[in-house]
Length: 204
Image (cartoon, rainbow, N blue to C red):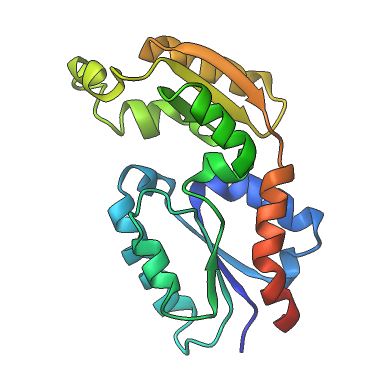
């Protein structure tokens, strides 16, 4: 049996590395990342995970943490997890929830349903992942179709980086949304990762 395996979204690289280093876990795990642009094609997440499992756990005997929430897979990710007690994932429906924590995220969600959320990664890569990813660079007339029901853009930041805040504010302007910023740090994400990894640490 090899080291526990972490298969994570590429949008979590910086944050996951920081949490693993802070908890002295980096050398105890093997971590592999999937492309961040799967954020726009959630139906491809589970097939991509199966490919990585076949490559890095061919014997099917490693503990595996899936570094995703449901992330728009509509339950298909949980169906994959149900295939083996060796599999677990991060809690919640999306990364905004495990970065903010479920309680705070629910409060933010209920306060204004028409909220479009960004993390540090999505703010820095807004143009490629969201504007171009949704084809708005080629078809700006679709802006109202995608974002007509949104009223604000809320940055849930992990770091105190003025460039990230500026990028998120520019994205809000580009989308025609009111900008707000809530710094959430990494505490909730740290807790989600370490709790999910607790069973794997026993066998590492």
